[in-house]
Image (tube, rainbow, N blue to C red; front, side, top):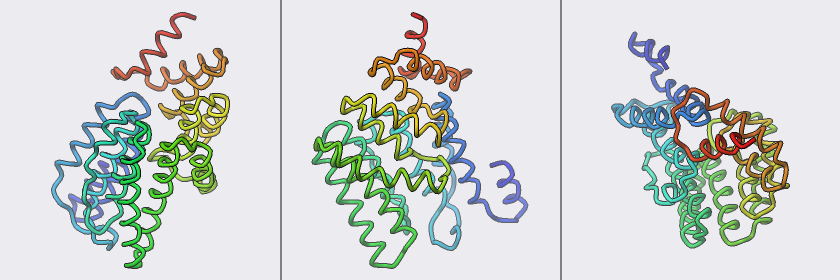
Length: 269
């Protein structure tokens, strides 16, 4: 971030590149119990002035990043009510608005509100079709990915867990085969979350374990694996995941209940 800002101050341009670094920094904050710093980063981005076009695609990169992180924050915090009540930001000429509806769909599905989830799916479908009609391939593909995941969560909210997992599995395998850099919510973690909520802890644990190979030390991946192991009667494995979660968040001042639970459980060993 500092390097990008220095080159921009020297008139060399490229100021939009700082947002890629900000995305990774936000991700690191969220995985290590530094959610207050992640929130401060979002506020910092929101306060930035409008910026020039980036990559010739006709959009303001600071607005795009603000919309993206605003959608990711409640999902990383597993605050489903906040996610479901998001007001998706409008970022003209991009697919970023679909990210807001994607987050809303996931939040509503976790709250078992299929009608709300269905409306979010419809909103993404409309955006996707518009990009297809205007031959905006990159944005169409981004919206299509959001649409597939939102449809999976709609199926889940309707009690169709197997159908939901069937939609998500090829997306997860594609992410892993491409070695996509972790900046958002891994699709395999979503599969594991669904299976755990469906009271299938052994299957959920296997998915969390696979996901942690590709997205190591994710807060929700570690906590999910611990909960799944606990529910499956594998307490020693659960303890290992709880201990690793606490180590990953060492030095943070987080008050997240997941960390409190991990500390209390390990104190009883």
